[in-house]
Image 1 (tube, rainbow, N blue to C red):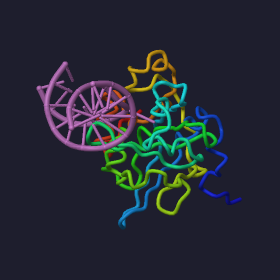
Image 2: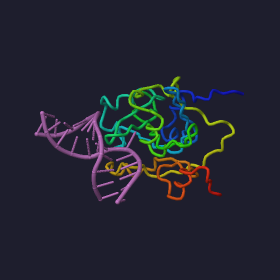
Image 3: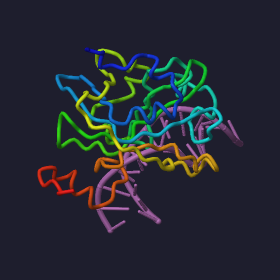
Image 4: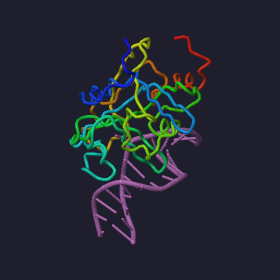
Length: 204
DNA sequence: ATTTGGATCGGT
DNA sequence: CCGATCCAAATT
């Protein structure tokens, strides 16, 4: 039976942790300027504002955080550290400002693409703030279920990265990743060598 | 109007 | 650890 490769809107209405976990193994696709970028999501982080002090939405509804207060399944793209964009999937019903940060992809359309970090993946996939608020089931940017033949990822969880300012919320294990992927942003050195030289596959 | 610091990254 | 690089948001 052919099911649509795009997850239904209800996918984004599961609990935000379930979405963060469920996104591991799914594909992100961006069609732009004659290029089709496709990658397999291998690392995510859940942000559950406004209570979660690590979330941008914990500081209230502002022009920047506006889309997180909107309906689920849309893109929240923000600019950070003077040079990077980061892409989030908005989750939960409108008025509930949750989101899932996409932290790393395994590049599928271009093996040379550097996609092992939230800033790098946006750079490689040409994702900028013009996509802030875009529907993630749209014609240019979308999410897809993994093909049926894909293996089920072994998912690990850990504390989120770069949120030391958030007190106890920094300790929540709301980061999810494919435990077997060398494309996870904090992969150890041995695995990093493998992703830079994919033709020299380690035996494993 | 000015200041502050950030959901990053690569190199040292 | 450090620097690159700039914007959002809070503060004055």
